[in-house]
Image (cartoon, rainbow, N blue to C red; front, top):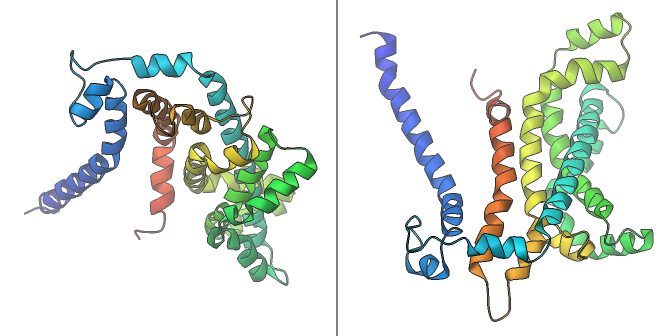
Length: 279
């Protein structure tokens, strides 16, 4: 029996496990999107079945479009998420490069200090952050959210990227220095392209908490001009009555950017997660 024939059952089993996990992970997403196209009776009467001619209804989407400026909410979420990701990846990669490349007194302590944010939730400092934003005049601005999310994402970015930076060949960087390249040129032109999978991994894991966050938009930017899409969806939650059609429609629309980002970076994400796992 050939090696390919012997490995066939193992390959089929791996694909079956992968498909099973994918189905389990996507089931809640599919359920939300599926029920967003139903009437209220269809949602509560048959939540696990696809829409039928009798239950199909777009009332949720028409309500979302008609009440509240969800286009503006999406724009705010997009601006905050993209800007925060840019600063997290830029400053996180630069700090990781410095910690992995240069040896100085306190290098290890500095790395541990930057990693403390992983263990200590930033929400514990909500009162101090709010006081700081009030004193700075940044309440009800997107800048406040960008600053907070950048600080929130940096510890994880530095922790992950520093490990990948250490794997970049010293010979390559020294060759660049011999050719007269500056440290910035070595960082942007030689190192960053080699750690692109890890940066895609950091981007995905950083983007999801930012996009889905409700706490800081509610505390720092609750005005109509600065509402994010997650905060805007709270319009349909009431103390006594909840518009489930509109909530499911809003959540379905909010899921789309996350899925698009995952599809774009899926290959880099898998490479970044599995890098070094198989020798």
